[in-house]
Length: 177
Image (tube, rainbow, N blue to C red):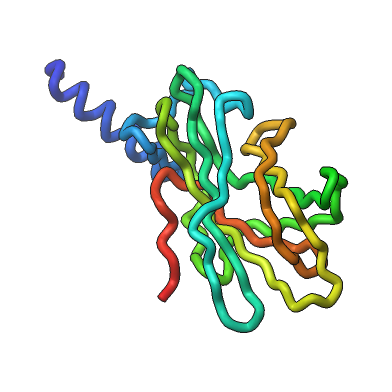
C-alpha cells in the first residue's frame, strides 16, 4: 500500500469514527479541537450581553458573548451556567433550561476552539410578566467545565428566575423569523 493510500485510508477511518460516535468539531478559528487543546478557563474569558431581543407575549432575550482574552487557544463545549443576582450581588433563585429558546433553535453541543480574540455566542430568553419575577441586576455566567463565573450587568425582571439558553457556538446562533 502506498503512502498516499495509507493517508487516505486513515483519514476515511477517522471520518467514520467521528460519524459513528456522533462527534463533530467546529471552531471559531477553523482549527479542530484536539485532546491537547486545554479547556477555556474563566480567567481566559470575558462575558457580555448584547443585542437585546424583544418579543411578544412578555418574552425578552439577548445574545451572550464570551471572548477569549487569554494568550492561548482553548476549547469550549456545551452550555453556560447562569445565575441571577439582585442588588448588592445577592444570589436569586435561578433555573436554567438548556436547549432552544423563544428566539433561536439550539445549534447543538459540539467542541470547538477559541483562539485569542475570538468569540463564542449563545442566545438567552426569559419572560417578564411581573408575577413571581426576580428583580435581577447582574447575571453570573459560568463557562462550560468551569467552577467559577463571570458577572455582567443584567437589569431585568425574570419570571420565577427561569431562563433558557442555547449551547455555545463559534458563530452567531441564527435567530428565528
